[in-house]
Figure 1 (cartoon, helix red, strand yellow):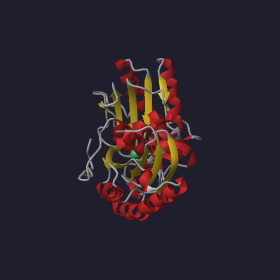
Figure 2 (figure 1 turned 90 degrees about the horizontal axis):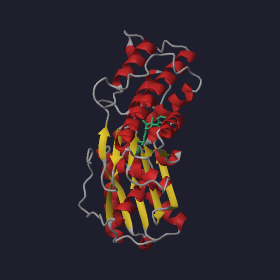
Figure 3 (figure 1 turned 180 degrees about the vertical axis):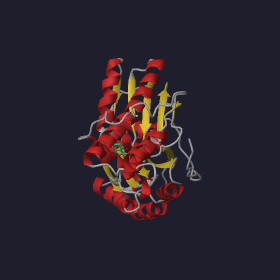
Figure 4 (figure 1 turned 180 degrees about the horizontal axis):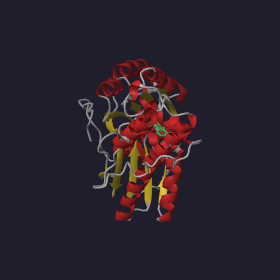
Length: 343
Ligand code: KG4
Ligand code: ZN
């Protein structure tokens, strides 16, 4: 069972960040590291799983050693190890899970498997301790675009999801189409600052006419045709000038954010929830943060948004979720599996 002074070691390796964190009492970050692989994957224009796995292997244990030294913590001080075991790139997850099992066995401490999506939501609770159920959470990253209704601490009802690409994936692909490079989200956000968001009429194109879902593949094709014509597609050059690229980036960003805010607000209104939480890499987007705050204010709801470094992948959120699971007595055994799609 959880104690007041628990120290949790959180480990994250589900995609392209290797991260570790030591968290005391679920609130105090004693030390952490995030080894981003962005520079390794840039040359391929996206995450290459084999490259990610190798980097996780190289960075994980040295990173753990570094934060233990920095926090002056010994293995005997650790109450539990929390590790992302689902969902994510299977090879990448396996490296974190295997390392966590080995450490748990060697140090004789409990092991807790953490759902990465739930951890993104835990980051919002960590940042905003007043956030309590019932609330609505938008998790928006390179792999997920889900709106959850959370009536109590243990229930995550998925109310909206994407029919095709995740929003972050769309940011990355559209940045590639516009010749802005990788990673797409921050590049699009920067280019959009000088663009006209009304230059292209894409505003409603991420909201399918029927159903409550998101769809980001249609707008991607729209940007492709606008930027490179219908014939040559990715083989041809970008036909837009700098202003045209900025306009396309701003119009795309506006459409994605409009869809995310519309669906999240609809769930808040349906359920009467007075809090909206944001999580995931795309929640680092300044325009989304502003628009969500503005829309929530109109319906009298408050918004909990983690700081930028807790929106993108990190291990503080894994340790924070681990602390909650430990407090609820949800400890796993050394046989836990890594699951690419597990809930
Ligand atoms: O949560 P995350 O770090 O990893 C996953 O679990 O996927 O999210 C990464 C995603 C990428 O698609 C990246 O382009 C996007 O988050 N992202 C952004 C911004 N910063 C990162 N998207 C829009 N605007 C940003 N500023
Ligand atoms: Zn993530």
